[in-house]
Amino acid sequence: MLLISYDISDDKLRTKFSKYLKKFGYRLQYSVFEIKNSAKILDNIKIAISSEFASKFDQSDSIMIFQLSNTCKIIKYGNAKNTDEDLLIIT
Image (cartoon, rainbow, N blue to C red; front, side):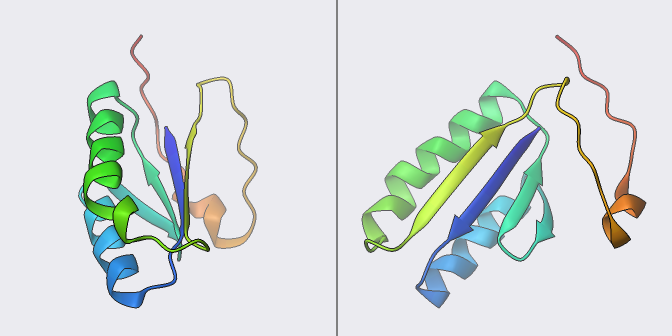
């Protein structure tokens, strides 16, 4: 699984980036998306960030991509614990 967290100050650019990420996964929180991991998807996202978004960032903007392995433990509280689903990992 990939977790992508972003902090983009420009409203229009932030909205465009979130709409882009919706193609691959779903929003966990306002600026955090969960995306099922594959090398192709990760490559597509990194290319899009480099070619389409990064040149429009100012010094305060950031995007962080976390690649989580199948051994990572996720502890959920509140409504988040209702979002569990079976995850099949093929290696």
